[in-house]
Length: 366
Image (cartoon, rainbow, N blue to C red; front, side, top):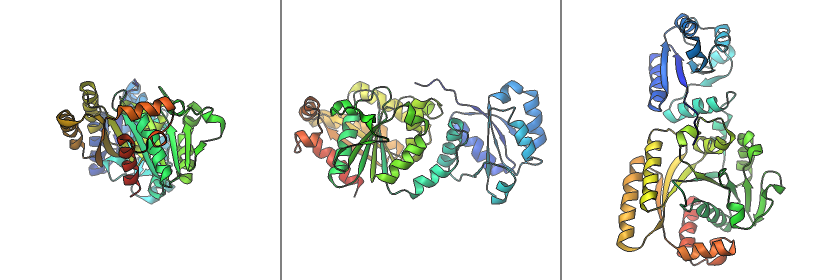
């Protein structure tokens, strides 16, 4: 888990409604809004009297602040940790540099500020990319360990390719990449970007080199594929990872801000439900752009399975997910695929597990 701390915030916005929206939203996300300047003089004075605090603070300003000038902002840039500016007026961009369009929703605000902390030169091109692309990006994360997250990601990608959609499977599980090992693929990095492994199916493994320019990598990917399936591995400590500057968090951040769907997979046993509860509590306090969905994997049969599903639904439905899915336990099919280092459709296309994942693929492209 990342130890990155959320920054403290200073606001310098004249519009009371917008300032309240900014400070209230960030406070709700767990950030500390330590000073709310009402004019440029108050802002300058606070930074001069509290140099140590200012040096660790994120300054969020708007050109409507009384008395503020580009020169003052440039001067304050030496005193605070980072500065991000918002404006609803296009004319302000000709005076102040690197302004962002004032966000209208909580997710837009959090996404911009969070991304700015990670990459100060972030512009809104990524947001425009998300709105204009034709590809569908699904990230799959695990609520705990041994949930079958990678198995689902691998076989979902295969099923999407089988129905005629060009698909890229990305292994972004930095702690334990395993997609290539599961299907006995060597030298995944032998070709630039990604490697074709079957008709309409390619695979990529994110290393530190790709993570440095993950936005560029994903921009190329969404231009080349109908579907992108990303195996994130465990998403514990999600809120910390979204502001963590380390390369191991770049794909998780991109998926939460730019992905179409974040599918969270959980086990039905006691520990699995406990981990799911922890992740759900965390997500309730974390704004992300990607739509949420949940999968209860390895559900038991009969009455026991009904009880497992009931607990699962009690936790997930309060988050208003895009959908919830249930996959029954099929240890035989999973073991056979593991033994033969192949996908489910290759070892037993009639298995219940394969049919469940094929149904998800059909649903995505309905």
